[in-house]
Amino acid sequence: MSKFIQAIKKLNTPTDMTVGAPWKGIILFTIPMLIGNIAQQLYNTVDSIVVGKYIGDSALAAVGSAGPIVNMLLVLFIGISAGASIMVSQYFGAKNREALSYTIGNCITVTAIASVGLIIIAAPFIRPVLEMLNTPDTIIDGCADYLLICLIGIAGMAYYNILSGILRGLGDSISALIYLLVATVINIALDIFFVAVVQMGVAGVALATIIAQIVSAILCFIRLARMRTHFDFGKSFLKMKGSYVKTLVRLGIPSGLTQAIFSSAMIIVQSLTNCFGEQFIAANVVIMRVDGFAMMPNFSFGTALTTYAGQNVGAGLYDRVNKGAKQGTFLAVACSTIITAAILFFGKPLMHVFTDTNELVDLSYRLMLILAVGYIAVAVTQSLSGIMRGAGDTMTPMWISLITTVLIRVPVAYGISYLTRTAELPYGRQECIQISLLASWVIGAVLTAIFYRFGKWKDKAIQ
Image (cartoon, rainbow, N blue to C red):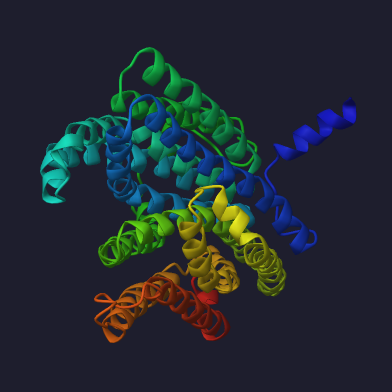
């Protein structure tokens, strides 16, 4: 029993990634995040199942239409979270208690101000934006209700993202996982209660989501407050200091912009996707669901390497950073290779999980084969980008994302579509969507490797 208690205590202790075998620390840090990402996917899937089963297709469409807007609202906090994680990991690695304390306190204050400001600014524009996006009259009311409730509760979503980012920066990926699992269970239970029992409709789904997020944020805050052996926590550290806020913005804004750029490109390419008809749209839905799970290891390794690099750069251990980059990238590539092989050999049965229509399965599988090898390229991009971000260079990954998304993916998709047009294919070949995505992934991996090898990311450490 004592060994079990010691093991639990060890899991709840911040991980110092400046010591021990790099690959072992990276794996131990990655696994909880990977489980958490799976939980997050299930979280969203259950939302859709409850809405579709208990309310109907219109409600499902309302929630789906609101999703991209909610993601755009969270872009600011994704940026703050990224900046916080980098600063915390570097100051933790450098054992700079004062700077770590001010960073955490300022992040909490900045998030509060940003949350209130976003509510005041965005609330009046919810309905006009939905009308501008030509949201159908049958779902616009439900969509507006969902967005307004999510906006009012945006602080819960924001603080979970920020505080879990701080915990990861301290080397604690276990707590963030546990609180996400708790939020998932609460969300599922409240979804069923508000929708099936109370019959609140779409508003009930939104309310369940923000309550679950608020609970997880409170748990993160309590966990952070109990870690005072590593930093100080009090009113004096909540007062904003220009140097820390400036660094937070400098590191965080590129990550937020990267997410915004990616979301915008998705909307542009979606307009081309819609031209190919209902079956192709359905095939892309299937592909994106599989893609969501296939990408999880890459994103998890990328985040783990951000923390790893941050701690070791903070400690001045650059040789160890390079060693970890090689081992972490190898692990990510190996994992993606296994996933690619699974898609190639078991792709069709996997597609049958989502549909019984053989034509749709064949189309989805054929298109998925184009993307499969690309996951290996993304493993390289995410791993090395994680290293650069952890070192304090968030601009280079942003520019690479801008180039591959805006200058490669969108033009390649529309270019292939235009060049392959015939009388039988008025919009060109359907494969243009997947080919453009594969091209952006491969070129992104090449550019990331070049900038990692010859870039100046080593000079970006926080002083």
